[in-house]
Image 1 (cartoon, helix red, strand yellow):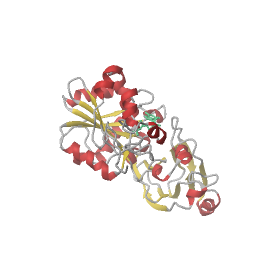
Image 2: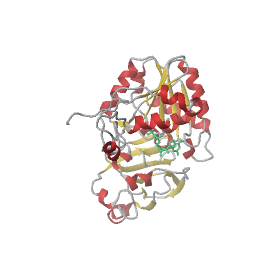
Image 3: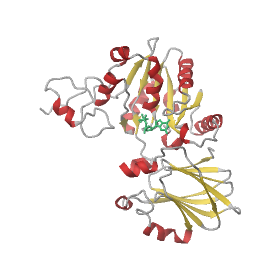
Image 4: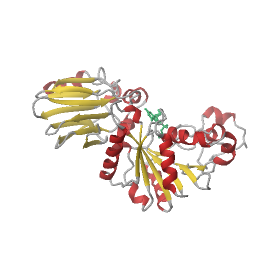
Length: 369
Ligand code: GDP
């Protein structure tokens, strides 16, 4: 029949096309199901049977409904942000929806930063940046969900600040929200109780409510897809290449006169003017090839190397990308971030022209490290 099948867990319309969107179930699983059987989407299935949170992603339009719901609630808001792409993964406008509700900002993927970087420094930096982005958090934390760093701290801070209220965990796709929540709830929940009591039908928004011991809930929300991250323009292998898997290893380049740095084929930094002996420091995935050249040769390099030695983009994707130029004059030591690709740190009084694909967020900010 043409009637849409709905997940009996979250109510989302069942679909077999997009794994990261709500209502997904593999086509093979759907075929095997009885005609009149109850169908769970993969996310609800995994939650029921494995206590495993799987995130789904929403576009901006649907995401607004989550923010609207929060707007009307008394709750603690936990915003998870990816330290590798702080501005790109930050949900803008969150303060407007929070009203007087307290906010905790979590900078996740701390393990990606160089070993020498102090956690306290990053916390202070995250606090300042949050203020600059219009949010006044009650608390700021850094965590590593995969390395299990500061997870207990986060759980304690949440418990202290929520004062009996529900807790909403928010974040853009891929910030590590599911990994973080899975780590946080693992010690608190025994398997039997989770299967019967932790699983609450959400709404078509696809939220998941995890019961806390006092009758309140920890609410996991879908991630929002940020269209201005480089990842939005990349697929499969290309995406893997720009995503750091290990600790960032900063690479310093002495730049004299009119020189250019390519970050793969997606980012280009032209030095326009600088005090003598400036060095630019690149923070990016080690799989990304960094190429230094004279600026006068840059066009030729784009022609000959981008899509070949300098990837991403792949040669096919190269034609789809248009680059946009932005000019910066630094008043202090700063990072120029290309959202999702990484950043370059430059000293004060340097002028640069930066090229990145049109639509990708490029941000000037006080140096993180
Ligand atoms: P979500 O979409 O926000 O729920 O993100 P996931 O939890 O699915 O994680 C997205 C990706 O980031 C996965 O590949 C995770 O392994 C990775 N990830 C999550 N947390 C961390 C972390 O603390 N450090 C690092 N290096 N990677 C992480």
